[in-house]
Image (cartoon, rainbow, N blue to C red; front, side, top):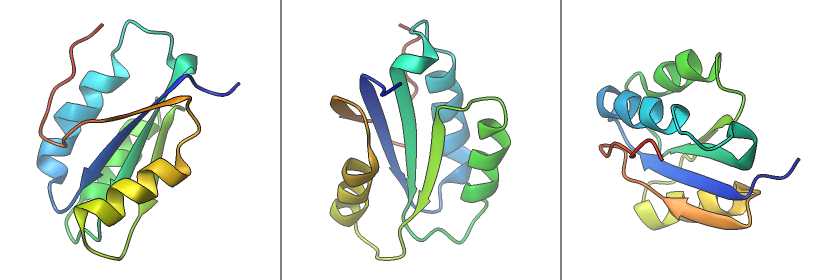
Length: 100
């Protein structure tokens, strides 16, 4: 089933902040089949991939992409290109989404 919404998070070396954002997105009241979460790792050298992997074990609508070219616009475009939803939304890696 194609998701209705793709939520794109771009991040660079902020795995410690990303965890809170991901947890808030994974605890939405919306049916998980209606949205996907896309993390675009913009060439991080910290534990960003490990953070995403640890949360994706329990959330099959969470996807990780590594973008080696630095730049927020490049990372956002990667997120948009890999998204499958009818609508694309962006959230900062240090934000916490409301549950609804």
